[in-house]
Every structure is written in structure tokens, then in C-alpha cells.
Image (tube, rainbow, N blue to C red; front, side):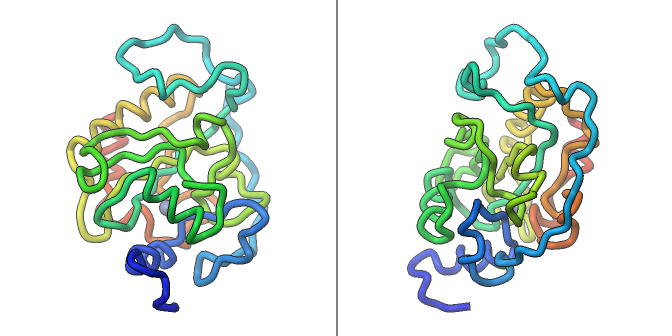
Length: 221
Ligand SMILES: [Zn+2]
């Protein structure tokens, strides 16, 4: 791995090791383990109600307006994939810069980023252009034919959960966000995956880290 990645080299290296996704046709340009483009076709899991764009529900005043997709272009999301940033600090803006200039993607690969107080607010949920525009993500490796990038909502928590754990505010925000998304798209708990447990991509990454409390999260939902 070259050491000419600039001031953020350490972060780049970690992210390349953990490997979170690719974005479109330029994926082969990516170096390191993230370069794998050999894909197994993964059928999209059946999901009762998935043909509906969303369940009709009134606007909830407790939900930030930015979490609601723009009218008229909402996708029928089928799953949720959870990530860590594998960095001590960060924000949607930082990851956008890295994914654009470091990986040559359209921009940040996730739909949502939840800060940890280092680089963005602790528990603060940032909404990215992928969600605002309702376009495929770049958070699970391999395109095209990547069902998870196409049909799963990507949420990244800032932190390296191979070493630390999410903050309580991050967890509370994550629960609130997932509940909202579950209700809107009728996504069952069984369709919420850690990156490393995503069907078709198991064991290809350490993300979201061994300390990510998936069991506790699912009990909180
Ligand atoms: Zn990931």
C-alpha cells in the first residue's frame, strides 16, 4: 500500500483494509482489497410489500424533515446495511471528500452518517446526496449486480469499532433512524445487516467491527 495518500493516509489505509464498497463503472481503478470485482449473483431477498414504494403514513413531527425522501423519486428500499467508518473521527463531508478524491466515486457512499463527536456531533445524523437523490449507494463492495448497493440503505457510524464502541448517543440516533426506515419500507429486523454479514458479502470485511453491538441493537428496535 503506497504511503503517498497525503495527510489522511492512515484513514485511507484502514478503509481500504476494511473495504466499504465501490461505485459504478470506475470500480476497477480502486487498488488494494477493495478492488475485488469478482461477484456472485445475489438474488434480492423476497420482501412482502417491497413492491410498494413505502407504506402511506402521516408525517411524524418527531422525525427530522431531512430524513424524508423527496416526493416522486422514492425507491422501494428492501434492507439496511450498517457500517463503521474505521476512523476515529469523521463526517459526511470528510467521507464525501475521501470517496470522491480518494476512490473516484460520485461522492460519499452512504445514505446516512452518524457522528461520534469527533468531526461531527455526537449522535448527529447527516443525510447525504445519495438519500436526497434516492440513488444507489456505494457501501458494499462490487458493482454492477450488487443488490445491497441498489436496494439496501447504507448507514455509517463514525468510529473504529474494532477498537472502540458506538457512543450511547450514536446508538439512540441509530435506533430512531432505523425505526423510521423500518416503518416506512416495512423492513424486518432480519433484513438489517452488518456489512460483514450482508448476504453475498460475508466475511469480506471487518466492518462494522467486532465491538458493534448488533444483538443489543436488534433488541432495542
Ligand atoms: Zn462497511
